[in-house]
Image (tube, rainbow, N blue to C red; front, side, top):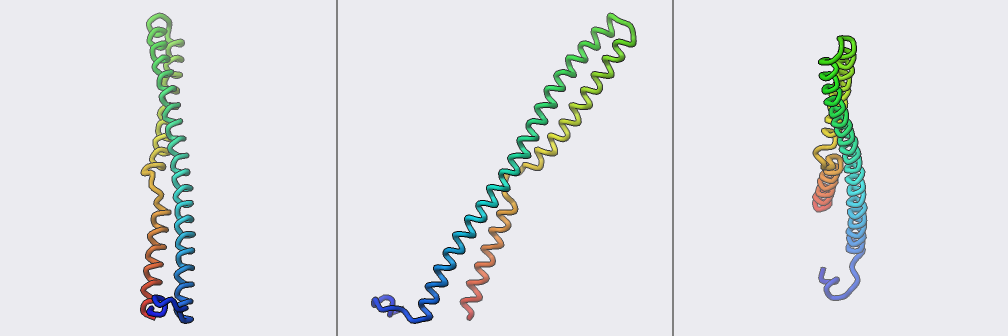
Length: 143
């Protein structure tokens, strides 16, 4: 240590330590970049599921509005016409609501896959990497 402070070149072991520190710094930078790339990919996947969920919920809402219109049409037809016409209208109304319900359930499941929007795999990987580095530093200190 005194040799470094006095301006003299270090010993071979000091140089290898410096190289190890430089190499560790480079590896740590690469590790952080890789973890950030993983986090971006994971968030993009969750965003995709959220978008699909919102689109399906929107489709369910539109179909539900058509269902309301069909229900109104059914009520009008039921009051003014004979059985077969309103019965057919009622069946179509029921089918529209069933389709809207199925779309809502699918949309809900897609939305649940996107929430919470935290990159769990990247966080776990980063924690494991930090633990590995800590262990390597401890092992290096003991040697």
